[in-house]
Length: 203
Ligand SMILES: N[C@@H](CCC(=O)N[C@@H](CS)C(=O)NCC(=O)O)C(=O)O
Image (cartoon, rainbow, N blue to C red; front, side, top):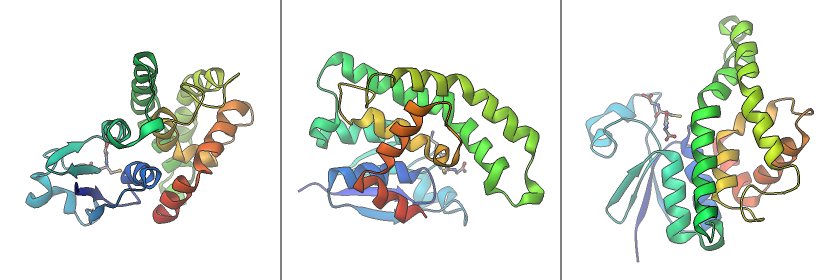
């Protein structure tokens, strides 16, 4: 019996790992590491992830950080059909995961912070508008990829969808009416029972 530990807190990017864990239905321990009290920078946690960021996992002694890599690893090892079945499908899952963290992650958080999350006095409407504008191209790419397909890879829900939709969590509150394929896909992903569970932990 392997032992799996997740380090982090649901209100952070750890929610991406918690969603995957819920999809897998495996038992795991959650070690609460929060950035609010600086727990992520304490020596005990820096020994797990020297970068001091959450999430990280320990799978029976194999320690891994980076939310996208964690989910790709977990899906490949434990996920069955959650992991694409061909080399091309696998490469697409990497593509969408890297797309999500390089093209979307920071910008969508910036958009969320300055359009709704920060106290009103700290919001910068210009920054929110700039972030939304920057998201236009990646969102159009996503919308186009989903034009004739309900899922990103191999015609079924896989880690590619999970990773991309998890990074796009904040877009659940974005007006995507001009990107209906992306909008419907995002809600399809987050409507899954495992996603709802992770979201309930987060919210
Ligand atoms: N690329 C990393 C980013 C992780 C990340 O930035 N996590 C935030 C919490 S949401 C964190 O730990 N921040 C602490 C810090 O920057 O000191 C991933 O996807 O896992």
